[in-house]
Structure formats: structure tokens, C-alpha cells
Amino acid sequence: MKRSLVICPRDPVGLSMDEAAAFLGIGATLFLRLVEDGRMPRPRRADGRRIWDADELTAAFRRLPRDLPAGASPHQDDGSDPWGTVRA
Image (cartoon, rainbow, N blue to C red; front, side):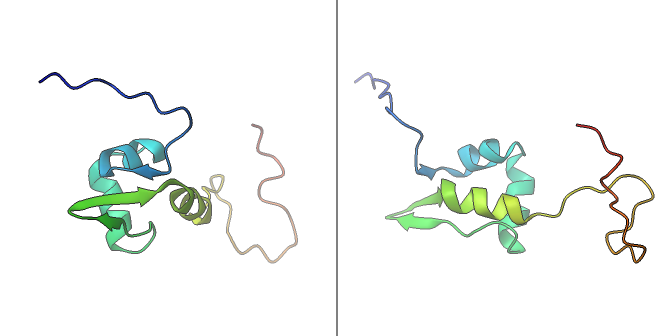
């Protein structure tokens, strides 16, 4: 029997492990390491399937630390803004 592709009319709420990793722009190995150390949420279970909540992934991603410019300290005491000279 041939399986047909079902088009979801909106973005999915639940993601497989590979989809969750791709959603974050990383590989599955790094994604699982982030889940294990608590930086990414644990999956939900539906029978034997592990499903990650897209909103929880987004929230966890936004909590990850930002990269600082070379030589900048995350705790500058001089009141300067280490991002002030960075251009997008």
C-alpha cells in the first residue's frame, strides 16, 4: 500500500527528534546532548513515540547564551555595552 503525503495546513506543534534538531538548525547528536543536559526540553510520549513541543523548543532556544564579540566579557564593570559596536 502506498502512503500518501498529508499536507499540514499550519506549522506542526509536535516534532520528531530529527525535525526538532532541524527546527533548531543543529544535528541530532548535539540536539540529544542538549536534551540530556537540560538545555532543551525532554520530549512528550505518545505510545512509543517521542514528540517535542515546538513552542517549548523555541523558549529553550531563546534561553541559550548569546555569543559575545571577541574580547568582550559577559560581566563588564565599566558600564559599557559590549554589543554597541556589533553590526547586524
